[in-house]
Length: 267
Image (cartoon, rainbow, N blue to C red):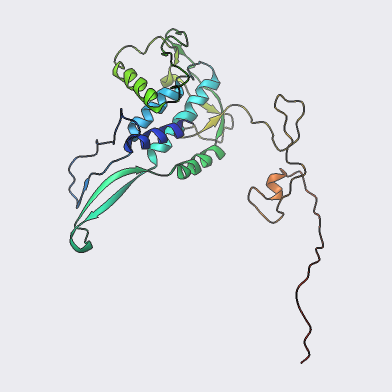
């Protein structure tokens, strides 16, 4: 979710859909090459900051669940930032490219989503390491949140304005919200063969429910994959080994008769 918010806000800024932010003009410095910065770069920095404040605002607890959520939120945002590429437009007589104007553009969210899926598949199960400390005093959950009507609660302009008001007062103390001292907190992989996760790695602390088997006793009832058709020769998600989770499968052979529209001709 944090990656989606960062991507959506960054592109909305550069396309003029949010009036309190614009293109990212920080790159407009001279270069020594045959191109110069110009155009309208996606405002990735604004999208990152907005997502961090908006999404992480509800993850202010001090237990492992909140820390894991913040870690994964940050991983998503950092992948958005890393998926920017330089795009250029040529200028010159008769189609030549004597000068180029370049800007930074975010990759499509599908590309970013594919990268995040790879990180999700490689996530490590973790536990809390040494230095589990918290500082400050907890504030009430609603003390710093302005009220708003249901009609504008999803308004991009409202969210952006509220974000800007918060940024303008960023120099004051970090409110009274209890926060984990991130400099002293480490995640420890449960599997010792796994590396310590970086800021761009995804982690988890609880096993996901097994949606492959039928469950009637859990809070969320699901049918599992029993009875579904699978492809015996495929190694993808429609393959029998993956879909049936190595529980085996039944093979059925059908004989289908049809008219072949052929005829016998004498030589």
